[in-house]
Length: 417
Image (cartoon, rainbow, N blue to C red; front, top):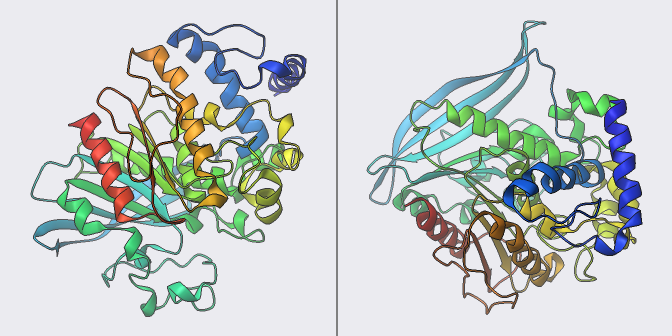
């Protein structure tokens, strides 16, 4: 504890001392140049990760060691999407406190697996309004946690109704994903942390050891959602219907795109990381005066981040790092960033620049083709053989669409098949 505090104070002092080098991915806070992947992993990666933990997202969620994750298969059935036969399973993820002998948390997980071909990979993602909104299947149970009010998804008194089924299906092209040979797993983000400043600690954060000890640097909702994604990975590793060799791909849109990035950064088991329209404090650079900024996001959603993050509101120049450093932490694993040209709030060009600058770190691992930092044309994806990172900016606004999913699967095919 004391050692961590001293380390962080030293980091802050050194950051201020070498402020001119703040945006240099390959120069440590001590001014040491990084020349190899080993140097990166032993020195620079660790200090960047620590900075993001302390200053932006909060310390990684840690629950008591007496909590044990258990899985329970609630239901399974064979369904058809077009001509594709699909195994639909409903799982219950349960965290049981072995000391108190009771369940502390329970989260439903919906899983779809194509049956007529070898599974190429499994997309693991959180959803915004409950599992039942992604499809009209009546066998998908309703999530009972707090759900934000939204007439579009037929939510009444912060709960799902029968009319809610399938109301976000346009974001989940299950038929196309299954036909392409990919599986899909999802949980409701609000089961891990309700998306509300008065309720966000009613999920896993009520058990977070760090929340009780490190107030300013404790995790916010994004950290809780990332923890949930990593727990889904743990559950899927033990799945009897998915081989351990099947690539695990974490993907998220908007605020859940931020969570997907943080999950991919903090857990190296992910084989691929995908961010869609993740914007401010996601993939977009923070020091560009474009779109949403740290002040606006922390004023409206202060509970998403560590309390310390508010220190940079209207003072982004104080940041010792920028979001290309976050993306670089995924290396050498495949990374995909997606933008939408009309999504000005998320700053598509800022997302692209972070993606492009992160190539410096990927180049340490392999001699791969490096694309110049020139913002591409709309609907002209940067998916190149031998390039471990991919990008596209599509036409349209803030959403996740069929076009996006097709590019994600194309990128997956390139790297895993």
